Amino acid sequence: MKQTIKDIDVNGKRVLLRVDFNVPLDENGVITDATRINMELPTIKYLLMHNASLVICSHLGRPDGEVNKKYSLFPVAKYLVKELVGRVFFANDCIGEDVENKAKSLKPGEVLLLENVRFHKEEEENDPVFASKLAKLADIYINDAFGTAHRKHASTYGVAKLLPSAVGFLMGKEITAIKGVIDNPERPLVAILGGAKVSDKIPLLNNFVNKCDTLLIGGGMAFTFLKANGVKVGSSLVDDEKIEVAKEILAKAKERGVKVVLPVDYLCSKEFSPNAKGVRVKGDIPEGLQGLDIGKTTIKIFLKEIKNANSIIWNGPLGVFEFKGFAKGTTEIAKAIIKFKGKAIVGGGDSVAAINKVGDTASIYHVSSGGGASLKLMSGESLPCVEIISNK
Ligand code: AMP
Image (tube, rainbow, N blue to C red):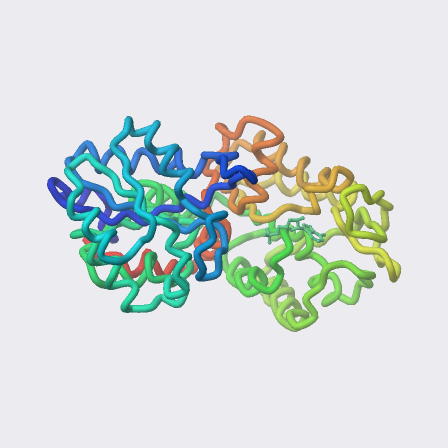
């Protein structure tokens, strides 16, 4: 068992807290959705109430190892000042002498938010020297950045080797909820998988075959499987390098009695554009057309499987839901999951955005803050940044 925030004495200590403040900003640097910050407030407030001083670090966007003010965390500091009644300071960097001095002068109950860790290329390289510079800033390390827990970076992994460590409330909640469903599911367990990151997600599908009773595959993911089954997919999104893996997954599923449901009809278009008009195609897709949403018969089949399920995991939209004409598949599945009475876990930014659009998500067992991390955990794999945390 991993140490949680409640297992350690933070009184009078300086805590380095890694969070996921990767919030969307508009062109004026205004936060357009503060959900990720709000989700982190219980951990921050708990630590401050227990007399810790906090050095908080995060990434924002993909600055690729270079300083880029577009991805500055300064707007987040301004937001935190309001939420935490003025006890927040901001550092223009995340390592170095100035930052160390600022961290040292913090009093219990105060917060220092560091500038974006990804302004240094060493962060994503998990550079040990960079990790040791981060470790210098505190006595204890707490990781609450579930969304990046599958990536071994300096601030999510390297630093955990250097300080006594624990997981934060958000990380703890994610792990408990997801493992709670995956390790001992009420069957049948139905996985709904979509999206476009085919090469990332296909290897994990292999694990899903060991866990689930039924796999519903839609979105861009479906076409690699359809092609593997000999269906013509026109110019739809396909990862040709993963056709063999798809074949193996289909064979393994058959052997294990796992039902794999692929789309039987699609809404297709000649072009990939927001105003594209959908044409319904059943079976083989002609050359020049690409499938951008699941069709109405497929929606019906998927909804029936959802009705028969006792547990559900969902990651990835079933179509290009950002385009008005191709959102129906994702919207219908989202509505069904909101009505679903069993335990459902929804992960992935797009699936969560889609479900938030169609209704109140309070009835859903768990809406995850992570995409890749939740998918990995759902598939039964462990997360390296959790594994590295000190044991109880
Ligand atoms: P992911 O990050 O893997 O969950 O992928 C999300 C993206 O998949 C969204 O931006 C969708 O527009 C895209 N997507 C879903 N269905 C399709 C499709 N049939 N063809 C191309 N892209 C798709």
